[in-house]
Image 1 (tube, rainbow, N blue to C red):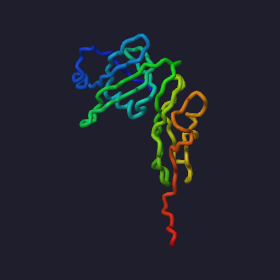
Image 2 (spheres, rainbow, N blue to C red):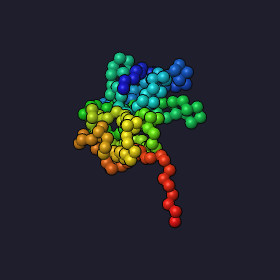
Image 3 (tube, helix red, strand yellow):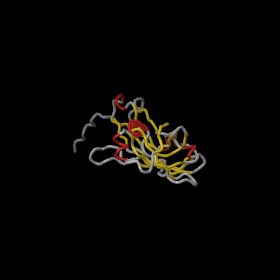
Length: 185
């Protein structure tokens, strides 16, 4: 996913930026460089959080210059729920990074059985170039009785990704939603 941003001046007031339709942010962790203050259009920041979430690897275009980053934090105001800040970590493609990948279930409304998602994020370590994006699982075609574990997800297979949880951790299960008759004692 690619998002646009612009460099902001250190003396720029964050309240003024928010009124102008921007979310203040910063990029840190670039080797030999100080943290950089940025501003991201509010609509683009909200789209980013809906599609990718924290821990996602992104391409940030900063005044026309592309930069690989991870979204590390996105705190919201506890009352208004408005985004307060975006924290990005600069990453090189050959650097090992610890992060999380988000799991989304799609076409849930088409599944007639009961769908229970037990895991929403998977912690892992990988080279920045090997980081998976959001994992989407289409549950519409899964039969009753299906139990998917972390090890069943093809995006996390192979030796390039080191998982932070066991491969047999349950992600989603599909159960018959009809009531089972109770046995009489």
